Length: 143
Image (cartoon, rainbow, N blue to C red; front, top):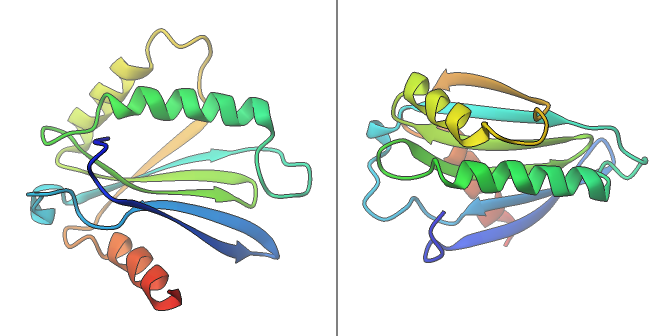
């Protein structure tokens, strides 16, 4: 993740529980969405104390996971665009050029971790980045 990209934090609610969204305000400079037509959703479900948010030890594990995936991001592979935390889950939404190559890089980045991360990966086509556009549109409407 490059530090020059503008990010924003938004709050929402689902099932009466808080949600936190962290997302890029814009597409990274020079990125053409059609070159990253695959949406990869990474899901980490966790037990909560009723607040819907992860306990501190799980937050530490999630930060380790996300730091490892930062090494994967870039023009050759793809970009993490949105993360959602709350209601017993954390999701990361990535747009990637090739899902097989992305997963190879993810597996390389996660190798050597002290333990397996309890995540599931799902991929779908989204060549016009409609999912990302919907998140940004929703936030902009509330401002």
